[in-house]
Image (cartoon, rainbow, N blue to C red; front, side):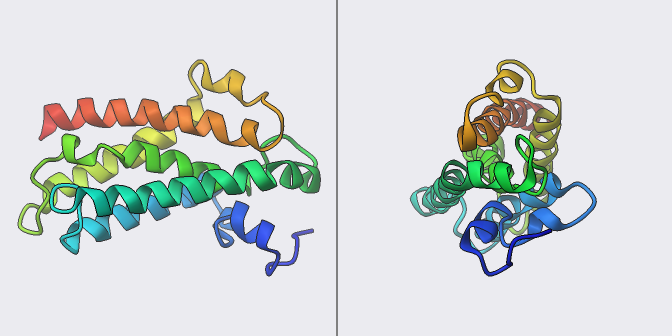
Length: 175
């Protein structure tokens, strides 16, 4: 049974219900930061033109998503009856923000006229994060054993760091 959709805990950990979309709820939970980053760049508020604004938006999303995991992760695990339940996707939202944080280094010429670098950078960041979130290379896998919401969150933050590095490397070569 799903908690009441008006429950703020449910809204926070499922990222307003994205965690209940199928297939692959983690993929749905990873999309909001990618879309927001792309919209910011296209609106002229990207990391090259307005780095403070761009990074503040990502930081706020990262902090709110992380806080949701830490505050309500234990509740979500108890409700669902398992460790790091799949419908909890605030951790994916937070981890994807980490992967997008250095976008200006990965794709320095992000303009509407040059949509190709933006699309490549966003796609690589998204795909790399999803891959590392699924594979969970060390120490990410072991970090899932942390108690409560920390175990839900920290492995995804490490996946975000791995994806950040991969995004930088791939975009450096391609762009």
